[in-house]
Image 1 (cartoon, rainbow, N blue to C red):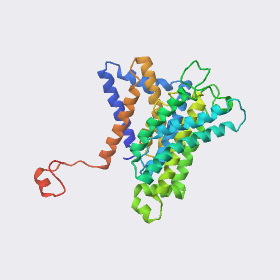
Image 2: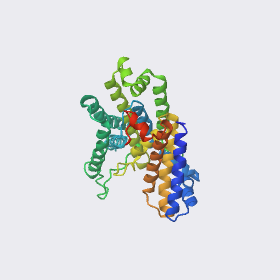
Image 3: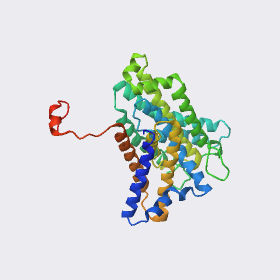
Image 4: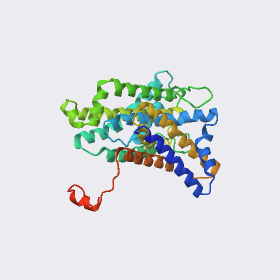
Length: 352
């Protein structure tokens, strides 16, 4: 039932969407077809689906590592932005240079940027016991404003007619195309490689076993001699590094420069994807393409049906709500307790 929960959540989301469109006076069948089928009805749409899925997959697979350790990193969005900033800065530093070494350097810088941003939250947690949910959420907004400052200030293109954007990266700093004639880039291959690497880490490596034990029972991990502080920092660095790779893959892939709107919320969507995929690498792949389809479907509904773009966020929220609700009803059973029975049980009150 735990693996059927995402399927049930998707069905309930579609059912609610059907009712919602009916109330809005929109043909519900036409609306659902527009959102979930029209965007991928041709080869161009399928290619764009892969482009949208790449950053979400990288963020989500990284989040699966920290969530298995019971570390609640909500900062993939900020780590993605810092990865794009670090890697973008390096790319702009070598605009006039050529060589095969530039792209690897740019990608590594993006990974370092994400790890740096996640590492701050990790140190705050292990050193000062700061709640990582709060710190990572707040750092998302700091990262966004740092990127905005950079593209409005030191990294703004002097020949860009005062638009808040950097110069276009050189060809040596751009990810090569995977499929000729499409925008599908080498970042997708890196994302799929990351899925396999995380699967090997968590299912075959001893360090992955330690991370999972820490998440299941921190007391058992401590008795076994596992260092919670080291494992926390390691898990956060892996998560942040993959989110940073997602960020630099976006700016050195389909975008080609630093802009204010690097991500429409990929880091937040990756949280839903991680849980929808049951923190399983291959389940996350399937959930990623569904989430990417929601982004494309929301844009299509805005164009074809005149519906607001916020429809994407609405469907994402409903999907997460129903997923959590299904998990509650699967893992727990509701029982009605009579007042007389409740009064005889000291652990239960009639108010409960």
